[in-house]
Length: 337
Image (cartoon, rainbow, N blue to C red; front, top):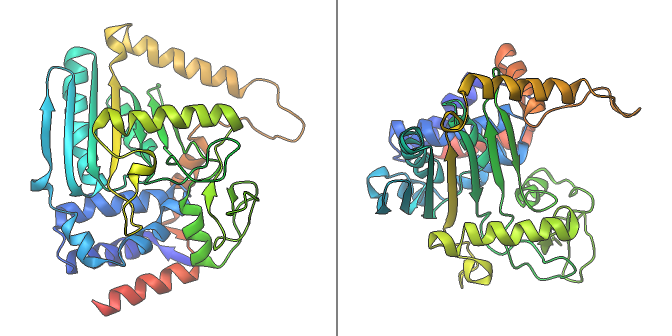
């Protein structure tokens, strides 16, 4: 159904505010969910918001920025204990540190642990690219969810990566899990009573399943190569930043532990002239888009381009389409407060 952006923003922000979340924290947290919807990342948009606000007490407890602590800090490295707070709030602190240090020293790294999800590391990377920084962000996807290549048992997380590179126009932005599909696809399929994507999840017998109720583990993307990257990212967002990893990233009550993340920012102006760097990136994009296409493709799309177009269209028209089930659940939550 068609939903006006301003109306759904106001209603969802009121849900958080009425639950006791501060106005400032509310805007930071909900903007992440809204951005997901605008970018047509449906599994990380309003459906994720609905799944996240079922526990109001948890939401309130995870929106206190004063609890976030820096545990280690030097010239280019910082380690942050999120103290169980919302990933969006911890990410905002991390970005401020990265911008300041990368501009001064050319490179900066921030590790975070004990935080909740940041949804899409690509959006966090994009925010840094708008400050003329190259950004790479690795995020733990929340517990053992992905089976090793050739295996059945879920051991590592979906371990998404986001990166962004500045150009003379919009940044090049990518956001992707190291599994075939994000694990939130299961939540979305259950919520909308739909089937899972093909060749993305397996059941307890190791058979590919389209039934979200039978999904036992996600499959690594790109076969063995994706599995290799998943191992690396699990280490970068686990042992390296004092966070959980593998089977140690699961609790006895079945709930996921808090997550780890690693943020990296590079100032290209420390290597080359910034404007030249951005012009050459734009030239590379042009070469890619103007190259010969296969018969079944009408256009070559650069990472982030499709999402940018979707967002621009939604903002111009002032609305987007959302499944009726999701809006009904939001209205129910709102009416019960």
